[in-house]
Amino acid sequence: DARVTQTPRDKVTEMGQEVTMRCQPILGHNTVFWYRQTMMQGLELLAYFRNRAPLDDSGMPKDRFSAEMPDATLATLKIQPSEPRDSAVYFCASGLGTSGRMGETQYFGPGTRLLVL
Amino acid sequence: AQTVTQSQPEMSVQEAETVTLSCTYDTSESDYYLFWYKQPPSRQMILVIRQEAYKQQNATENRFSVNFQKAAKSFSLKISDSQLGDAAMYFCAYDDSGGGADGLTFGKGTHLIIQP
Image 1 (tube, each protein chain N blue to C red):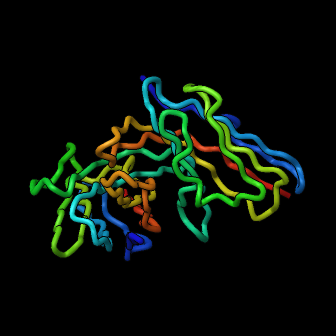
Image 2 (spheres, rainbow over the protein chains, first blue to last red):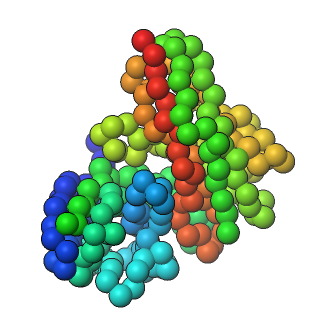
């Protein structure tokens, strides 16, 4: 049963600390998305990659957030330094996209719940 | 920019009854995809159903079906024979099919309560 995995599931940290969230996409999927969910803003796209190349990170605060794909089986989202307003659930999703036609189904991981004190 | 609106923050239905969740969207595109995702208390986002805008036939998945009205930009989800396990947040989502796709645009969600 192929699924997206994310670690850690929950993270509590203090303001100013570095936070790294990891995602393992479904084997064979070539597109990885990062979303953030808050009560106020709902679900928002932060960044996404296709074939490990970043295609769009316009939804991400550039000064403190960074997203990478060191290899096809690992995507990371890092916050440095973290702030209380970063508290949210961060989801990773993966899909199998083609260059000419998007709209592939995205499969979500269980999310990382982050609390910054 | 595309927007997705779910006008019902909360809906309640008796077990075994039918319920319809509303979703409208705004886009200037003619080709796109629409999705319904379910988020139970476990917070896992689960795909319920997918609709391709160029297909006129409404998608169905077992007890779940959609009423896709392209001209009205409406995409409602019907759940038949509601079960306790259907209780969750339901999110409507839009995806542009063009080459410049930028991920899913979500509505704010509808909290579905199933009354036993």
